[in-house]
Image (tube, rainbow, N blue to C red; front, side):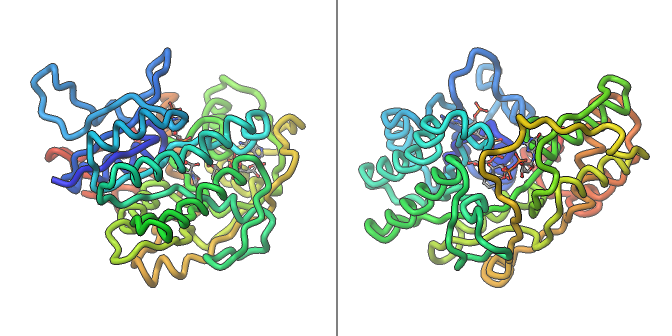
Length: 355
Ligand code: NAP
Ligand code: G4F
């Protein structure tokens, strides 16, 4: 049985990746942070308590990217075949308020893992969650050859992590890869990222629980894809014959305003009647236009996304409407069952991807 260690297992991507790895027969070790409230909501549905005599291939351990001791101990004790580093302070706007912390966790945290791998001497494959934010001000479309131009403390920290991953590959022969992922969303997306903020607000407005939605820059363009498809490519990258860095996105870019039109329009509302601008949500430096050229992912890994912009909005809208007990038009759910039936099977049960 292959063993994987996943940092950031309690996040959006960590939860989908864990479902995928369990469905492929892996034993999954997840690193979670100590928190005063439960922070495992996204993985509770797949966790089995061994105290109940349940057999489980999902094991959780406390640790932190800020603690090299915790990382070294976990890596030498578990001896994982694969390590997926998904943990990060991942919010761009917040990184301007917490630049030092973001640099420590999102940047140096990656170095701490690589150093723990090197010192342990174990033969493992390492995945780094790099980001299209590293391209920052570079002209679209962005490819593996596009020079980085980070525009935030978050992007600068990720760029450091990206380069140090490449350096440990070249210096020490570690099988270390970076997936340069463009924005990917889902019903499990954190509530303060713009897509989820919008879909939750539309549902709340429809339910009569909210009057207005306050946002920042509506003109930024993003290449938005569907998160469960993106975790598949993380796994494929580590199964590849040689380590490489690769761009992952849909090749389609939309403005925040277009996301608003689509989400409000889905339930028959006009966003202009509800959206207000709050300067607090603007960033000191913005990334205006991200658009992936995912040709290499298609040619080398045979990966192509099935869910594009409109489908994504529908999937997220249906989920947030249902959470508030509202009738959802259902297009999103139909899309999921049409295209992903049987994808995430674990312990002979179909794991519901978005509940
Ligand atoms: P997310 O939902 O924000 O999850 C981040 C995870 O990191 C959570 O599990 C969080 O734990 C954990 N974490 C934060 N600080 C930590 C620390 N000091 N030590 C240990 N764990 C810590 O992020 P995501 O959307 O799943 O993204 C996964 C990764 O891909 C991140 O590295 C992100 O920067 C990167 N990325 C994301 C996208 C995207 O569009 N989603 C695109 C490109 C790259 P808690 O649950 O306790 O907070
Ligand atoms: O949803 P966002 O916060 O995502 P952003 O900044 O693109 O970062 C996300 O994607 C990156 C990949 O490119 C990841 F690396 C990163 O970890 C994260 O997952 O903002 C998207 C756009 C921005 O241009 C922002 O200025 O939406 C704009 N926006 C407008 N109003 C807003 C808001 N963003 C947020 N979060 N909240 C607003 O009220």
